[in-house]
Image (cartoon, rainbow, N blue to C red; front, side, top):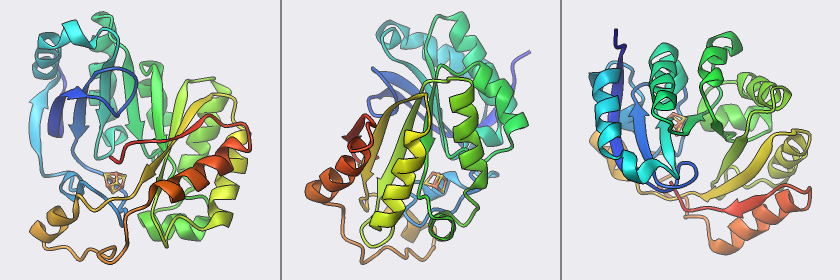
Length: 246
Ligand code: SF4
């Protein structure tokens, strides 16, 4: 029997959420409240639309010819809010011979995440800051579950890309970045780290939803700022790159 879940949308030709060309499922619902969220309409778990795994797999099959060197990414929102749905999508993708990537903030109990991780080939783990108070300020939740997830992924040697959004005057605090880099250097499984420059492309969505957008006056991160932060990670032997803004 096919499971059912809530999604915000799908993208059939994604190029920034994992290796190769990817089919992306954006699930609905997220427990975080990131100040820079570019998809605030993904956050309320009751919005979006209900779909079956069968429906998604049929859509994925239509794209299969060009997904062979890429795969399927489940992003959000937060996919681990719907662990059984996400696991079933990945299980069915594996039956089709497709690579699976999970884009998560890691804000989830490990016992809930483990069955999903068994079906995940690559984790895209968003770590939004390192200093606990700053992490809370950015996301409105505690950093502890994300750090526990990062350590667990290292223990089981799960291929992982870390993503860090560089927001001027917020996450660019050097102590914050250096502590994050020191932590990531202790992990054995991190294949790359992407520094994503903050942008305001989601601002209009905040306005449409009638939400106050606190970063209205924050400038976008410049290429020089991104490079400076990339170098902090590289100094610790981490494969860091400046990535395309999400
Ligand atoms: S984790 Fe992603 S979807 Fe959730 S609030 Fe943060 S940026 Fe938005």
